[in-house]
Image (cartoon, rainbow, N blue to C red):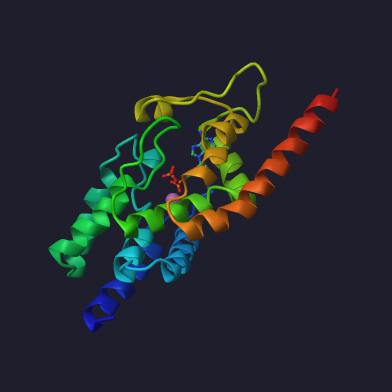
Length: 220
Ligand code: ADP
Ligand code: NI
């Protein structure tokens, strides 16, 4: 990798590490770190992916998540652009990275994915791996608790959202989030490696939910 690219990457690691506040909902530096490492792992199996863009996209993907910015979906790309300009990245790097930041998020069960680049598809797979499995379960309950959502209410049925607005404003239970998003992710992985890595996590999560519902039925 060219020297100036290495410099921009090192700067970005430091910037993101300092910019992500400690966060109890699983959107902290450690989430970014796991996504970064898993994205690199997936990239090592995918031909033709530019690892510089993969890393910048992974590092900056949650720099201003809409979920923490009053629903503003453009905040991430805006802040990433401003930062990358200052860090001395080229126009092309900025636009390829922002394509990732702008399109990484899940937008609802029936909403089509707009991610076009192979680098973006890799980062999206890595982000989605962190939403499933043992870590995914912890993050879902922590985030649901922060939103004030119920753990479970059998009377509230899962909804397969047709638009991002519908998905964003939904006040569902955390158990429903498994049906509305988490169980759908394995089938939506973009890359072969992503699919392979999702398999074990998906199975673990389904086992967990089976046990949860079993205990619920025998509860007084
Ligand atoms: P995305 O950009 O696709 O939302 P993030 O990495 O920003 O991905 O965060 C996703 C995680 O946030 C989810 O996998 C889940 O753990 C949590 N989350 C989002 N919405 C909900 C919800 N309604 N209930 C529980 N957890 C949620
Ligand atoms: Ni993320």
